[in-house]
Image (cartoon, rainbow, N blue to C red; front, side, top):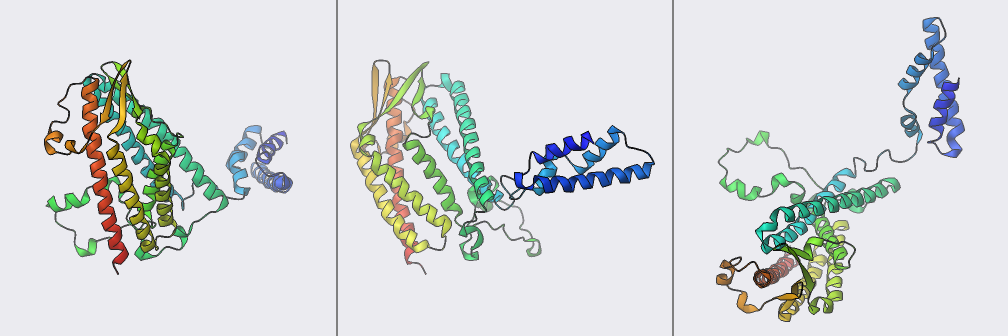
Length: 369
């Protein structure tokens, strides 16, 4: 009986204190009945190997104890898994963009450091991706353990279902490819409806993206590739101009307001008009921030040893002639700073244009039936 006692002790160690006695007594009866049935079949007492074989058939102590445990049997159950997967994909896409920006800055500095820059970018993406997956799994495990199910999972409507385009890389660019494709369309009988997804998908992605930015902005997340670039074998340090310290809290508030709007879109996808009104106000605030940043004229400083060069610009750089000569400058400190200045001017200009389109898009959602 020592073998049964050892087996039951291993099972009992995984069970709650108040249930151990009843469960182990039930298991003991089961094991003894299996032993007796086998002995009756063989007409003799069981050997230790035969007893152990029966215990293996009953199951490993961890597996047997899990059958009696109350609550979820997995960190991320089948109901939450699609949402966990989308969050991980969206977060990894944002991290990939961030690392790509850092890699671009390093490649602009000089091709001699390309291999090392790519290795650093991959290293940063790998470890930040593991952190993201761990955080998403922890959040899903809490949802699973406490049975949390937001309204967008249980009270959705068909007309609120959004497309998870960014969660399925195979669909990226499908619209462009459809016009150029010469493959015949399948018959109507072969058509299958597209897979439905939970509403608020676009808001969920935006919430994750802006949340990562907010964590970086307040210093919780760090991306070394955005503060140092390789320049001819030396590290050029990127330091922020005074304008960023002046606008620290306005930009943080701007990001938090955007996150609250997108969070509302996740939990209340039907409240589109109220969000459209809020998005117009936020976009106007974004235009103001963009204008103030552009007017500052000085955004960053590149420093190598005692030498420094400003990343700065004005409206004169907003010309296609300047854009065509991008990257033709020297690869020294001044040349790299000049190239990044042109890039920064155009980034701010494109950002302003996108905000204007966002205002018109929100206004259309506000007035349409």
